[in-house]
Amino acid sequence: MAQKMTMSARNLFGGLPRVVSPHLRKTDPDQYGQEHPIETPELISSSLSLLLVELANIRRSERQYLVEAEEKYPELAKSDEHRILFLRCEMFNVDLAALRLTKYWKQRIELFGDKAFAPLTVDDTLKDDISALELGFLTLLPGRDHGGRGLVYVEPCRLGNVGYDYMSMVKATWYVLHVALEAKSVQQKGVVFIVDNQNTDPKLHFDKKLIQMNAEAVRGILPVRVGGIHICHPSNLFARLAPLVKLLLGPRIGKRINVHSGSEDAILDTLSSRYGIRPEAVPAALGGFTTVNQHLWLEDRREVESAVEATFVKTVEEGTTEDATVEESNAEVETADEGTTEDAAVEETSVDAAVEETSVEVNTADEGTTDEPSVDEGTEKLEDGKTEEAAGEDGKTEEAADEK
Image (tube, rainbow, N blue to C red; front, side, top):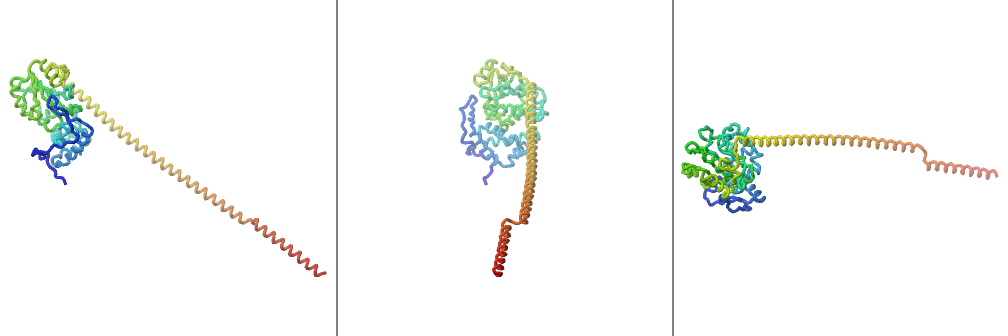
């Protein structure tokens, strides 16, 4: 039996290679220094197979939350569409994807409890966290950069003196990023955060705990790649805090922080020319052309989620109707078969009776024929009579001879 090892122990010594498909090929580094897998059917199929093997090699105690999810929410947790999110996030490094997948379900269940085993929706899963969503600290913008990355707008000034629940804020972050992941290009390329530091007072709006909790929710857990973080219009104090922010975010994300100062036109030009974020996709508050309205965005999400739920219910009902129709058809076929069998039995009985009756008639006819003398028998009697007559004549002759 193959020895199971923890995912952390797997790369403890640094000499163990990554688990990857032989079909893995990557692009050249882009403007963020990131490479991207060139997806082919062979890469996806082989990587999914390797992922199942890798997950099976993890101790059950370390994947107990994933096991629970596969039992209670198999339509998501056991689907290829779900698993491939983690492969794409880890650039098809299968062992890292397996580790992220197990950690994801651990935190999802810890955050949402029993609601973790249902789609993340505004009016159901997050109905108790609406205030955190409406706060608008994180907003998913409608546009994307030229590579297909999602754009998430961050406004620290919205925190201010407003009270908020930290866990609700983390749930809101989870929700926004899950909506972003509905786009395939975002699954493949990740997201870019655009931080608007205008009207921001670091003493009031710099929440170290919130930054750290959100970073931990993303780093190594959510299946989303962070392409870059653009901090626009930083204050002098925030510029001095930038090293601390990078430290809190970790080296992998921290190195992708880009600070932009100067006029709106200068920032827009840098975002567009160097990073492929066109002015049409930039919020109006930063000089772009996108209007940000968190309330309208949430209303749009409600409509989308209601339509998805209605489609799901309709599909289930149609499936139930089809099953009932099939059962009814099968019952009719069975009834028809039974009727045919009965008809065949009746016909068979009628035939047998007719044959039997015919046999009786034939037997009766044979008996009647036997009572009548046959032609041969009559002929024999006739011949016997002639012989007797001849014998009588001979007797008369002999008498005449005696008289003479």
